[in-house]
Length: 341
Image 1 (tube, helix red, strand yellow):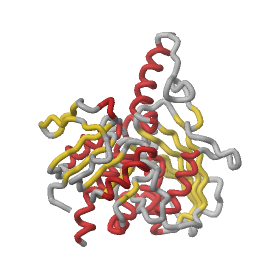
Image 2: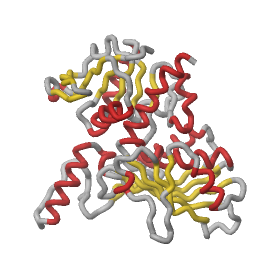
Image 3: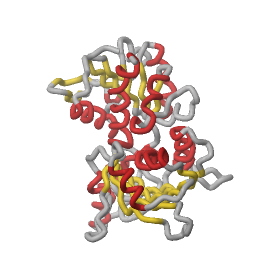
Image 4: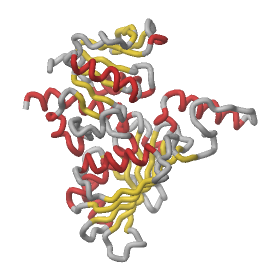
């Protein structure tokens, strides 16, 4: 890996693509040359990066010649088609889609949890699902101390998880609703203004779980390297722009107290405790938006479990940052270290 790598971003015009650019700049990620890639309809437009105007190129079979690192956030179909092309050209790919996450030969990485897996890549490293990242960053340090054997998660997922167009639809439909005007949604399956609904992925008719929920279950087990962990999850779309929340109750193998959880999380990387009972102030999307950390609060014993093995928490994280772009950039930052190790 070069000190000043050639970096390509596939899907640069999307919501996560824009955050790739902003996050690299904010964190001082070293870039010798940036290739901005998108669909044909965006080719010829330009973006600004560190005082330079970068012309957007159409994503093609020849886009990755000379590229060292390729960041993908263009959807699973595009990833399945072009990620192997990028790898064949010599690039290391960090892919934000679900296309390769459950491939046993592809590391699924949250740097705060399993950064050591980066060095095992064969050209592709998968970025986990945003809801999984939001939940697992604070659960992992607890799991290391006192194994979590069961976890129940209810998510409250922002429009950003469905892309920039969904965010715009939330804004426009809210404006229309406030003005008592008719609005016909085009991106999300149900009205998103002043409403919430089951996550907009397909339902498995056999289990009743949607695809988002299945992803969280499978990815939790892969990242934690624990196929025994029992995971129940309900994923819901809510009228929030860009920060996911989750209500989580977990059961540990051994008894655990609220004080122990606070102590563990107080020093955990990527976690910030926001838990003020006196002021009734806990993690909120408005505070998580634009922040790198996962906010954790409502830390309390689960009164439904008299054995003292269970704790409930509430968390919030920026879906476009830690749930997507930031996590990918953190992986890319570790590539030179892991390759040379």
